[in-house]
Image (cartoon, rainbow, N blue to C red; front, side, top):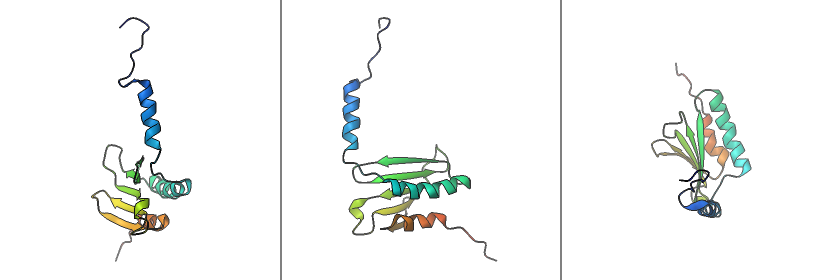
Length: 123
């Protein structure tokens, strides 16, 4: 390659912009109020040292907030928003690492309440 010439990325610059713009339209996402509720619980668990990382995925049919103990592991929990399920079982669900749905509901705060439960020692 001649000096001063930059190698163009595979697919070209125009294709990358078109893909990014096309992917965002029509995807489901958490709104500001939902994110505030989720991040409030997440912040408490981080302060307790239980959780360390998170990821947000926005897809066509659902949005997922994944919670990790360590970055390299599979998520401990996933908070899923699926508006198509809103009339049936509720738009929000809490999914454990094993894939088991821990809680479903129409209200996000009710679903997140499961994460705030503290274990008590029984005498």
